[in-house]
Amino acid sequence: MKKFLRFESKNQPIMKKLLLSLFILFAFKTSFSQLVYADVAGIFHESCGRCHNTNSHGPNLLTYSAVLAEASNVQIHLTSGYMPPWLPDTTYTRFTHENLISAANRAAILSWISTGSLPGDTTLAPAPPVYSQYGLNGTPDLELTIPTFTSNAISDDSYVCFSLPTGLAVDRVVRAYEIVAGNESIVHHVLVNVDTTGTVTSDLSGTCYTISGDYSLGGYAPGAPPTVFPNSSLIKAGINIKAGSNIILQIHYPIGSDGEKDSTRIRMYFYPIGEPGIRPVTVSTPLQNWLLNIPANTVQTFNATYPGGSTTLPADLSVYAAFPHSHKLATSMTNYAFTSTDTIPLIRINAWDFNWQGYYTFKNMVKVPAGYKLRATHVYDNTTANPFNPSSPPVTVYAGTSTNDEMLFDSFQTLLYMPGDELINIDSILAMDPLLNINQLPIQSPNALNTYAYPNPFTNNVNISYELDDASKVSLNVYSITGTNVRSMQSSFEQTGKHEFVWDGKNNAGAKLPNGTYFYVLKSNKYQSQGKLILTGNK
Image (cartoon, rainbow, N blue to C red; front, side):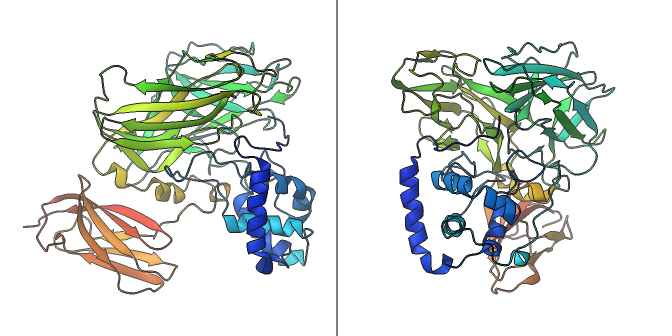
């Protein structure tokens, strides 16, 4: 996708957003009246830098001169709500690495721009973060690069499938991977499948709408973080790749990118051979609807349910990530699990944008019990009111794989549920993961409390220590392996530094608990952390 500007965002008229921004600016007029670059530089670093640096696809926004050159565009995109791009509704469910900006920070930038983008003493501005070309640290165990390809997207979008032999002599389990676009201005998105037979060949025709392979690894879209599965004492997870497999990359090049060259890569990190305790992640697309029929000048709603008929999910699932997908007529979509009496929210997008999509990883995995069904609801606007409608005047659109067709194609990364899964804070685990280049991720990702439990396993007492950098009280909740809260404690002070709780293996009523595995969750005003406890010899 070339670096072009969008002057409005679907379902969010600029006038409405502008009035809201003006109201915010009026409310903060006194405090923001003298802002200079040093006052807002940190906001640009935090909220924009991950995508807007010299090693990424967006225009650089890390220095005063760079921001000044883009100031009018920043104003337009912040006012319209198009930037920063984050599609999921945070009032519905929460995800890791949420690419958000607070109302106060948005107002500060808009005020600074509206009052002349004053430089002040730019030497007082914080130094910009250093961004790598990569989001993952270290040397990958396997790196595969497509042969240099010249885009053939002349009169229509081009979908090209590259089959890359892994050369693996033994099975390996993927712990993390990232896709590095060779030409970020033209790589719209990439889907990754595994061909276990090693026989699928490349299709460079531009019409490879359906990616081959036996199962999916996931994908890439501009701005999306690397895919990392948790590797901790609480949970290890990954995806197995058989020896001799090929990796299939389906790359979407947008119309008008013809003649430009690309050499996209995938960098893969594996668990050590023979690593025990790795739980398999399944990537699937259970919610599909190939009966879409959207007449011109209509707004239509379509659904998909899995399993069909009277069948329900046969086993408890832990949903790790969600990836709802449609094309350019879609305006909103919702995924949830349900029974006749209950609904479990998964993901809701109120203003779909085809240009920004990918897997969204839940802060805590979502338990979907056996006996539930999965459901998707997508709304499609095939009228002239839809600024993304590819046809003018509108024409009837059916389900299909071309960009100008439509899809309801919602995927998930799931694990078979184990007791306590929903209590594990994936966000904290990933925030501490040494593979992740933390500068590549949004700063607002919560940190852990640097907890440590000892002795563990324990018989009489366990000390749960933590280190606090904010003056706030801390709560401790201990859960059984079935998720029942068995003990709650709270600190009586608000002090920074190192502290600890002592738990005696008893419940809130003072009764001794049976031996077994327990989970603890620590929470302060800012942070959260968790761990596993093993109680032995409690009589």
